[in-house]
Image 1 (cartoon, rainbow, N blue to C red):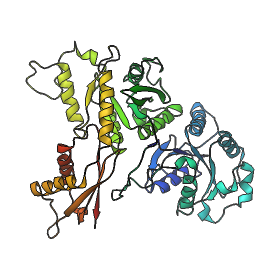
Image 2 (image 1 turned 60 degrees about the vertical axis):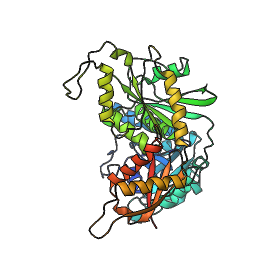
Image 3 (image 1 turned 45 degrees about the vertical axis):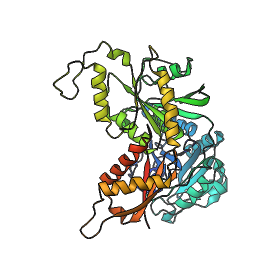
Image 4 (image 1 turned 180 degrees about the horizontal axis):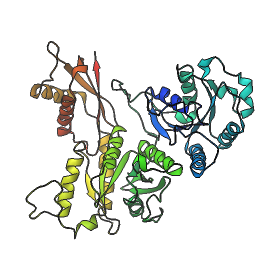
Length: 460
């Protein structure tokens, strides 16, 4: 599957970009206020699993360094985006700043749409007043983020762009029954994901056997996604080295923000993600959040512990208060800590690596092929229904006082990730713990190493 396209909302302050993002996402993600300049950062969300929509800070006069950096951020948005939405207030005549934004967007040679917001107020100027901006009339849409007027047509127009071919809408819906897909991507894509300075570029160089990425002790050296292709056991593998992600509050405006967007897009593009965890800083909420995003995207996952050579001479660290540390190494306690911190990923393999020694680089390639095979596993319907019947006998689903959910049969509808649809009656009453129990029963026979599996529940 190719990466999700990036659509950027750009424009001056108070044009309604944040409101448009919230309307498209059908939930409040961006802060909306009447005060100009509320959005100082970018806000992003995935729309119908079809594209990543980002809302940038509004353009203001560069009276200080911060405002100048906002203008840089808009330029970065133009460079990072696949489609650009230039947003204006439809009730106001455009000025030289609007003209500059539109000119810069058109100069990129990417699809540009003119979004004229606030048309519900009844004071919109005619289209002829905006033609001097240079955006084609067929790519101009009057919308109202407040009422939703024109939003569907705008989305329909954007999705008609050739770059969106092959992206399925609405796959995130729980009851969506996906159809089998055939990937046109020849190479198996593996993304290296993690915080800055965790060793992604060093591992990238080790795996690629060439000094392709800049390796530096300064955090955040990698700004874009570096790529290298290798062949292992006859299989083409493309390795993606991404910029490190810091906590949202610690990310700088401008280029680092859009490096984060490229990283999230790399997760969407990849087949398998190597989540790199620093052996000297194993407890990281951000690492756990990244793991959750990888799983939510349905990608294969390998937990890669970097700098493991530092564990050899380290004192055993009693992370969780165990009393007996006799005959246990620092590596033993680190693995225990990871097992508890990532208890939602019992199927993810853990590899200890060192860029200094090249330890276990080959093991990563082996796991990559194993996980790829697991992601393509198809289970016969008869086998699945035997597992479902056993699960019901061992642990019948609980229900309400007079109603009990009744799973009837299960089928596999997709691979990459494996997706199973359970049919029955009153399945909305199924408790999450029973769904997890069913997943464990499936994994007992089909481990799906490093592979999240998805479920939908459909009432017949």
